[in-house]
Amino acid sequence: MPITHFLYLAFGLFVIGLLGVLLRRNVLIVLMSVELMLNAANIVLVAFSRMHANLDGQVLAMFTIAVAAAEAAVGLAIVVSIFRSRTGTDIDDLSLLRD
Image (cartoon, rainbow, N blue to C red; front, side, top):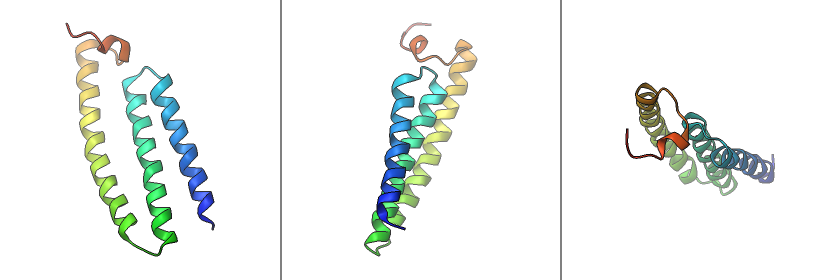
């Protein structure tokens, strides 16, 4: 399979994630969109690693996945805390610094 297929897939995923970050107002959707963009970058890393027959990109992608899992756990904990205190996860409501 040519590398261009992987690059088109990664580009599509990145654009979908970017649109989710820019257009949605829900914190949970924005968090999922950021994770989608990160996975698109991982696909590019693995594709170029495969093209050059080198394992460095794959190792870096695995490390990135581990860091993203920790980021998702912390992000979800923050979203749950926000939902409990404000009964909503709208980004516009979170821009205020006061209770």
